[in-house]
Length: 140
Length: 252
Image: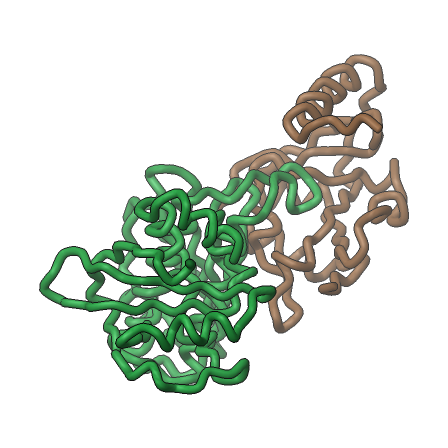
């Protein structure tokens, strides 16, 4: 079976995203929408059970738009991972982030939370994430 | 033979070596696994890669000392002469992997006149040392993370950031001990950018230190207590005053 290398897979993903942005219909993200983000249980779960703010540090943070997916779909293949829900209005208004729909062929709900995530912003997102845990992360 | 491996260990004021007779009967339970911190192990692995002849490198590779595969090392012993006044010292290293024959290694060690034991210059309390050891071990582990480790598009963790984080932990522990910080839990987390975040939680104050993933290696810190916060951004460039961070833990 042909297994593409990691760099090739990344190129294919990027290409897929570009094509998807032309082919797939982008939806408008509303303020009353929510996005879901998976939480890595090995690297971002503290021994006391808290989620580290490092989980929300990516300036171009991948998420899934809630209304285009299900928890089961987002979590498929990610045993032990956690899942938190973040309100779009909160991300835009209190954290100065942009939320963009970036559908992929493999994931129509894929969306990005774009913006610099300074220390204070990470804290705010972390607090919101802690209030909206959909699936608790559990280390293997 | 593995015991022929000679490495040049750079002179470090942090470390001292205590020699003892090689007559000690070593058993599985007496292996000084915790005497060598992952940082020191990485330092040694780097020196081994740089200065050991290829033939011996091959042997060392077999026991997992190369490629920074530190997980595979159960025990590592260094023996030879050590002189604090010398810039460089010659050492013989024996590495033992989880799969190697411990009997052979014991006889190798016994054939030497002396064994130098790797220890910290200022030995620190058991529980504190273990905290530091665990933190360093976790940070070194980040070098094994592949791209996309967070299930999304996270970058590989930057080697410079790892080194800076290990240096910071060293300095941080020194400051914490000097300031006699009573209760603090520590955590290190990789960041999607390839940087590293170190977190300190005391009963009243939470501090986060962020290390950027590039040559500049900028460091920023953020502290939060009783509804207030300090965010120093990246004002200090790649340097951070760990004494100030230790002081932050006393805010009320």
